[in-house]
Length: 351
Image (cartoon, rainbow, N blue to C red; front, side):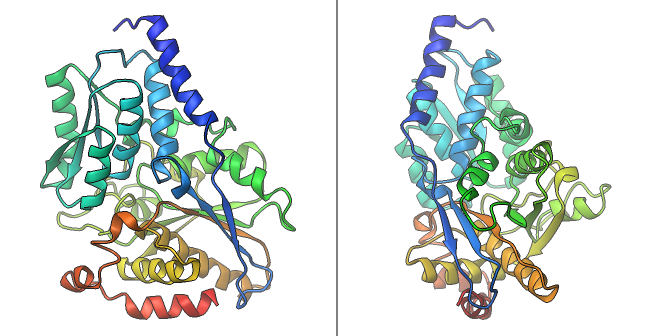
């Protein structure tokens, strides 16, 4: 496909201008009385224009596709997503005047679907989450459109050497802290793009910081990390935590740049999410709870070993999108998710 260079130049300018209008996301410090010398920092990605970490990914995917001339002024743009990536991509598609189709699992939280529609996107729901890839490919073929394919291109669309990526931002914001180089950075993995970017950046900049990926128990990533021969989950295994954890190893997941993986049960993620929401005075999402559970486990291990140092993690999105799910006691009870004990334990550790 040959794309008119004047249109392409204007499309890239619009995306870059949008970035320039947005201040960087905040880095929130939480001192933990039970863990002196081990402060916790939350990189608040909920403050992006589309409310989540996926705003960064969507911007990179669009720029990557544009500069490869995969997208033109009449291209239908398609994505397979559990919700948040599609929200952000719908935002950028509307900015460029493009039609956007989101292929999502039917179980995706209703507020996420509303947000996709708010930004002009169209919903194509599928009952089997494993089918989203094939359906996205089919729709791209039927429409002559472009499948952005976050699960393949996330790790290559972002400049891990430091072109305004999340790792560079974290270290710039940590510069004036008493321990500017954190002991750990903790993130989840959906595509694997964020962990690949952070892990590569740490090695490129020669930082001693280690990368830990927090993964739902019902995800293949931590199994693959332990045994590279494991690439898929058994049929029926699934996490309720949207945005992270996958039933198959995605092409963007790069285990070699990860130093540690911690598997977190869904009830632990929800309990940590509830406790952190109470501590901050505002709701956060489930994947943030997954990250937090791993952070406090690392803090305990560091304390037992007599170590100090900061731990940085991601506040992936706000909790308003999950008012009818993770923040609804009836919804959790109907699915047999026991979270109360984890919430109490986490509240104690947060102080």
